[in-house]
Length: 465
Image (tube, rainbow, N blue to C red; front, side, top):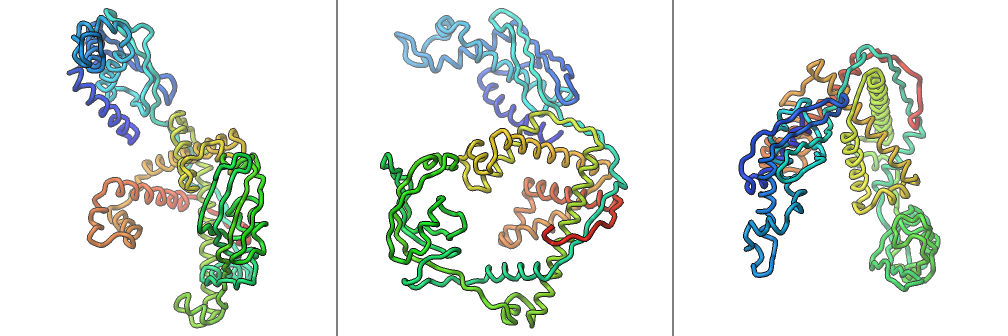
């Protein structure tokens, strides 16, 4: 059974447990399945008049606890009067209960197996009659692998220049910088870190939009409202200023978009980053190096190794793309929809703004909503296709990951965060074990197709390329 099927059964089972407590036992309803496409099917469920009657009675009983009629307290109305009062108005509830009972009973027998819950509907559902329900559902994706061995691909080789080494040293230098406060007579300049008390008010309505006693931002880094950096340039600690900013209609926060805001700001502190000197002492602080020349050599080797890994990954991706192009893959829409939604949630998490909708995300990315949706869907389909062909190759070639590899990876990944006495619990956690095994298997499968391809030497490229 696939993960999707297992999750579907669990979902239905939870719902059914509630219904069974209210409705009692149920038999397996007559059903048949018709294949619509390679990845969709239609199920037809047929019930007897007695089953329809039982579903209506269950719906009446459920409503009995909520209904209130003159002369009776809530929940104390006799069932016969409930039935007379409600009549066919409970048909929707009755149908829902009957469908849930019936589908749970047959779901494991459906062939092909479902990975989505069908929307079952009936043309005629009424007391005293038989009922027929029909609904389409998605089935597992289908993959017919094309050629996946001895595929030709070129792998470029990178050259590391003195400029590349210099840029990396500058980055490391900035990482180890120390913050120094500017004296009160010196004004803020680009790249300075400013701490300020700030109040922002919508000018037309006088509405407070933002207040922060210790708002910290870096000038020129685009971390604040458009136009704020220009106004703060040259301001000194203790200085107070008031000014207006006209916000663009496309600004992602609707509280600010298209409005004129008044900003009151008081500079509390201005700091700048002081860089350490690039000398032998710096090299010694970076590890087991005696001189700056030794450290530069290490930086060159590390950059070369990173470039080699990146170019190998690029070659692997090209091999997978060839395999996908040569294979026949069918994926139901529900799988793609779920993948798109998952990617959207990941974007929101990275931005730390779960409340953003698709329109706001589109504005942030400088795209139209339609283009963002198109790109997300295209990316989702590619990701699904890549995983599917790799899974097929994994099964075809019996590629496996040992328990020892999984244990070693968990210890390596979580060891620095989890106390030794809690590591045993992680090694028994089925979700973590499954996730780590899946990731290792994905990497191992990529390595397998790379080792079994015709990888040819490509051109020399710069590190930036």
